[in-house]
Length: 147
Image (cartoon, rainbow, N blue to C red; front, top):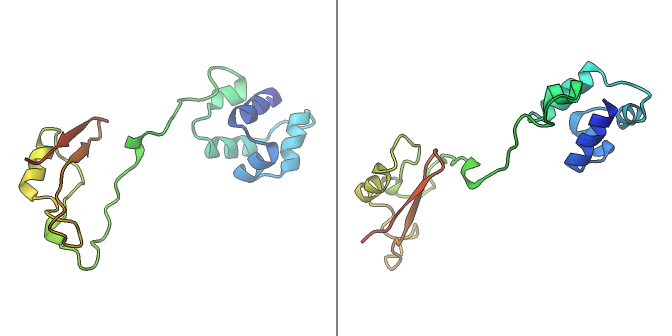
């Protein structure tokens, strides 16, 4: 198990002190495991798996399978749009509901119907909307350009 822990630390590019702080254990405990003096406790393994949810329990415990259950790499689409309270002085009638429930084909049509931001939020009539991109939960997008 010490070899797997060492491989994990190398893969994560972490020192054992950084790792100890992240999972909430004493650095000396990790040092003892890496030296072969002690075996990791169930509490240690539980903390490790809780902190690194993509780490495979079967790999760390038995050395079977891949190190990670799944490989995640953040993308632009992983960011969720947060609904904020309207800003003071903002015209709520010009607000667009981005909460979803629309199909790819109705996104641009919905934008046409709601007259998205005819000027900038400070009321400059010389600023015009030139392009809107719609990003969908299925990781596709469409573009709307007003005529």
